Image (cartoon, rainbow, N blue to C red; front, side, top):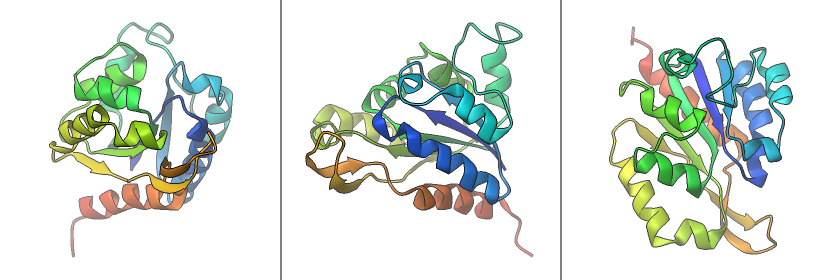
Length: 183
């Protein structure tokens, strides 16, 4: 499958590098889009080297002003890992103000979205964040890989850490298995 991996800006962004490697080990092609905030934690070069494709970061770079449509037509699945509260809210309300949100909103409704949130526990439990997640999960195409409880980057203990890479990759692989015709 062709997997579009959207990486958003939180400390868990470094784990997306391992997700790329594991997806490729399972035979998937991977194209990475990073938000500007994600580039504060990881570099596009890392993802370009790992995926073998140039990592995309901006609406204003590339061969044409409609690269976002080309990127939106490419994937069989979109994986957002880690998914911040910020990007979740933007998608839930149809806001397309960066390359990642523009591509996701322009992706055909038949393309599944795998959401792997990561954030502080207070943010994860915030009623506005829950409402945004509920809004996204009301769509049949959305699949959630829930964050886990552990000690977070801020030193607090609670739910909000990115799920383990193998669980996230399994969610994508399970979608690929559903797409295969039974014999």
